[in-house]
Image (cartoon, rainbow, N blue to C red; front, side, top):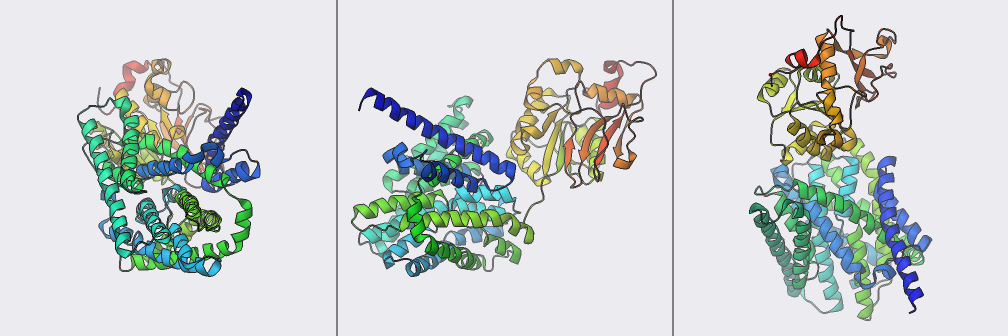
Length: 613
């Protein structure tokens, strides 16, 4: 090939790689903005970029690395999902349904899917059994984003999480065993042995990988700035090591490794979880763009009708029966069991396994042309049905958690406790985060929820989620408490919903860490001293309704928080008093003009702080 040809080829690859990343992230961003499952947009973008325009050709782009890379990427996603599976958060009575879903549920789905495939398509019995085994795989690539989108109540949320993560290695192992039996002549004993080898190798590799990380981090043999790359290295090492023993044992390894790390107490892993979540979003976006781009539309058209019927069978027959048998006698309510039956989308693992198996079957001299296109239709169909129907089903079955609408107060000066009292009276949950026992006692006396646990523990994030916090304001005069709490809180509510009010005007010029991490509330130039001085001169916090607003009388008032018709709070940013919208209210600070000027530093702190610092 000439130099110009090589350069042109390199440029095409660069464009394709860029398109995968750009389209993936933009689709996820649009999904969030439009409040629709981003997976649907990702698949649509992949179809446009692949068979639609030819911009992306995954097979040409990655060649022989395509399927190993996809499998490794799924392994990393399984590790990230495992980091969120904390055993202590799962109620004792809810553990048996998980075990049943990944055993009995998989078996039921396999049998029904295989029978339907045999009747719907012109394929042999063994090929139908193989296709049925592939379609048992769901996985975190589709389940976790849909759970985050629908905000399902516990214990259903936890059950679906555990099932979605563990069903990938279980289903993939089953499919490999079936393939070996189809191509070769494995008997029942050989199949059981292969399953045991796969699960055993993966479990051992997962425990060894988790143990290595805990030892290295516990003894501080790895610098803090290398924790995340070192963790990723060990994940890849465990994945590759397990796969040397048995194909797909790597998926078991990364899953077990994540779960072990999530449930140990020797080393903190919150920073690792945050890194893996960010990496997982990028991997997820790329995987679904690649999946959509690999579709052969002509092959899909040939099997579409039968595949659509198969989707209906899987959704309306296989999943309800699997859930019914798996949850019988579990103590779950009828609504909880019904919602479990409303969530079983297929994802990237099913697509990758079907593509790999199609190649192996062709090399073995017995191709199954329907394998890949049928799997793709099932993926798109189940994602569309469950993705569009999951939120509706959650509302109808009363399984949806209410949107978070609480406010966290980091630090508790007296006026902040007054604000918390008012917000709580307006049905806005309030959580006070403090390390000061006097502040904590004062907040408790007011009937406010108080968090006094470790700021570097997962308990803070869990508390914020359980209370339903959507906004946070850092108000402490302890700089370290503000900075540390802000860094942790924004992981839960997002940077756009975290605010920092500096104590003094001088702090606004220092560009402190808290000021750079969070937004400034209440308007330009407003500090805690400004509020304290207003209160010292006779000001007070008041609730203002639309009919109460008087532009002339309230010209100097300071708006703090507005609560809309739906009860959602929003921190005011302008500093300019305006009338509340119809049906909403505002909490405003009445600022009377002082008769004589006062020095804030001299008297304010004595008024505002519960304990003199």
